[in-house]
Image (cartoon, rainbow, N blue to C red; front, side, top):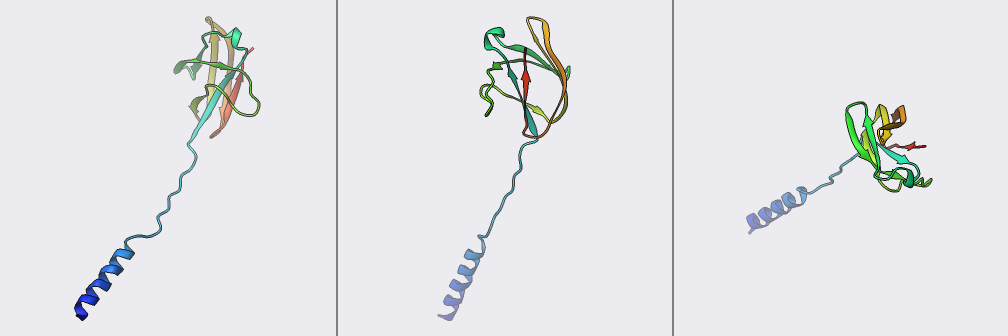
Length: 110
């Protein structure tokens, strides 16, 4: 009888010791964002964006919202970047920018 009680007690100890505190920690992603701001009627169909003479994509132009970005924002890596924006094969914006982690840089188009 004593052996059964000891076996049950040891079994319960093993069962309760298998669980414990499990913590995890995550940080913010190491990325930044750009948003193109301008008059929508001036840039129908979007603008052509060249990032660091490597990546080229079609960007959507948004109206300016001071409180938070609305519309499309584009994720880029942090650091220095050369951005060229063109519309109908004409360069309308060309600049070297620096963006830090989780920053949204507004590119103001004329």
